[in-house]
Structures are given as C-alpha cells and as structure tokens.
Image (tube, rainbow, N blue to C red):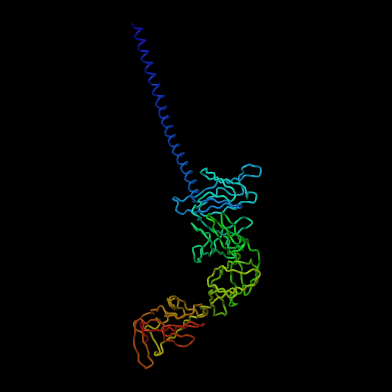
Length: 501
C-alpha cells in the first residue's frame, strides 16, 4: 500500500513539472511567432510602398513629368505635362552606357546622385555620345534610351511640346544661363526668359536670342558667351543651326532647342577716371577684382559683359585748414552711357577702347567754426557793481566757462567754448543759443551804478550771455547761416536774473 502511494506522488510531481516546462517554453515561443508575423506585415507594407513609388515614378516619366530625351550629346529632362499630380523629382544613381566591347559601364565622370527638379540638361562626354544608355534611379527604375529617342509623351494630334534653353559651354562643362527669347510662336512677337516651354505647338514660327549672354560667378567675375550653334533634341526643322535668329517648323513631335554659346576670349583696354579729379582715392570692383583709382587708371579687362561696382560712395576732401568738401557718388558714364546705380553690368564690344568716368557731386561742405567765449565786466549801461561785503564778488572766475556749465548750442549739438581749435560743422542754417547761467555769490546787497547816475540795489545777480557776434559783427536773428568758415563769439556779463540790467 505504501509503495503504491509513493508511485502516485511521483507521477503527480512529474506531471506538474511537465506543465511548468510547457508554460515556460510555449509562451515566449508564441510571442516570438507573433513578432515575426508583425514584422512580416511591416516588411510587406514597406515592399508594397516601394513598389507603388517605383511604379508611380515610371508613370510620371511616361506622362512627361519629366520626359527624358536622349540626343547624341546630352540627356534632357523637361516637364512637358504641367497638369500631372503630384509633381515628381528624379534622383539618378547611375547612368550606364554600352561600351564598344559590349559591356554596360557606369559613367563615372558625373557626381552622383543627380537630382532632377526642373529642366535639366546633362552633357555626355564624347566617348559616350551616340551609344545606348540606361538611366538608373534611386527607386530602381531603369530607363533605356538609344540616340535621338525619348521616354515621354508624343502627341498623336500632330502637335508637340517645344522648349528653348541656353547654355555657355566651357571646358569644364555647360553652364545654364537665362536670357531673352523673342518669338511669334503664339502669333505676335513676345519676349520670354529661357528656359521656356510651350505646350501643344505646331506650324512654323521664328525665334531670336541675343548674340551674347553672360553668367556671373560667385566671386563677381563674368563669363561672356558668344552664340555658336543650336543643339536639336527631338523632331523639327531649322533654317539654320548657326544663326541666333532662326525659323522653326515643328513636325508633330516634341522639340527642344539649346542655344549653345562659346566663351568670349577677347580683351578691351579701358580708362577709369574720377571726376572731379581731387576726389581720390576711389575704390571700384571690376569683374570681382578690386582697384584703387587716383585720378586716372588704364586697365586691360576681358571684353563682353563687365560687372562694375563703385565701392566708395562718399568721401571728404580737405581743401584748406577750415574747409572740407563732402562728395557723394552721382553716376558712372561708360563712353556716353550713364549708370546712376553703384553696381551695374554693361557690355563692351571686343577690341574696343572704353572710358569709365566715375562722377561725384559736392553736395555740402564742412567748415571750421570757432566758438569763442568772451566777457565784459559790466553791461554797457552800468559803470560799476559793488557787492556788500565787497570780497564776495571775486569768488567767480569768468575765464573758465566749462567749470560753471556754460556751453553753446548750435542746432541739436552742444559745443564747449574753444578759442583756438575749430569745430568742423556741416553747412546749413542753424538755430543757436548759449546754454547755462551761473548764479553768482549773493550778499546782503549788490550796488549797481548805471550810466545815467542812478544807483540800484539787487540780490542774486547772475553771469549769463549778453551779446552774440559772427566774425565780429553783432547778430540779432534766431539763425546762423554756415556757408564759410566763421567765428562765433558769445559775450557774457553780470545780469539780474535773465534780463539785462
């Protein structure tokens, strides 16, 4: 009986341990399986989103947003369908070309990634031109093109998109520039700015772009381009490929014309002169290079468009100890053409001499003004003043006006009295006054003896302004005209309160 009881207990314990093991192992396993399922759902969503974006990009290119054209020398991306929603950018991670050995090779001369957001022209090196290419995007789309082929909309109604762009082709590659385009594509002649696109066009019309264009680099230097030829991408007929004014006939398919310019390599001799001649030195910047002009300077600069900036817009010129002339920039004339702006771009024909005259106007002067302090012991109608007691009168020193807060106000400025050093003050009409009154020592009485032999007794006499002189002549008006060097003298004396005795 005891043996059976032990076996039963052992079986129960074993069963309990088995349940514990199952619980410990099964629960984490279920959570792991659930996590894997959730991750599978997330990964599936990511894959689906990627597939959607990749497909959307492909459709946008097919609908012309942007369309891709491959000519013999360049790949052109341009937006022919402005109504496509949403607009798209294309990020190019590689451009492959089929080499002469039959191997697809990455074009390594470009800096990837290339992001296309607006009209873009990618010029290909000579060894790639004329060979099939594949444009690889960041979404994994592969756009295969052969020379003179395109991916994008072709109108079946006999009309196609038409676009004009302009570039200066330098040794380092093309530089896209904007310039004026004149065309009668819509009937009457109108002006547009390149790059410009026209949708649903057909027929024959004229276009004209300038003979010269320019591009300003970050350092202020200018690259001038002279027209060389048209680059045609798509289907169309031009009556000339080397004239900047041509007649275009569309053939029912999209056409892109690129006005191709070559850098202008020519020099001009110029003379820079400052007027009037005493205004010097003057600093100017020509095509990013700083020059200091004193009088006249002869220079040799690149012909074509010139970026000219006047740095010195105002300056002072001392013609004597007491006169300083102030000059303000007025205009610059270039062989008869005037520019009032301090910075402008003008065109210089190659191999021609030009004169730049930078003119200034003497709009006002500074004059040396002596502001002098003087005094008389008594007013003119007084013969004597006697304080009581007598010694109080000598506590005041009339030769130290600043010590007692006495100044001269001219306009909105205060000046200390200085009989030896002038102040340089701008020409003009100024109100004036003497500032500060010294309250002298008081006593029981001040005995004032007048010239009419009368005697009066006062208390609290003050030392204040009594008369004003300009160049020794008394003045009584409320304003002083400063149009030459002057000496202004304020005469102080003893007064009763603020009134003359």
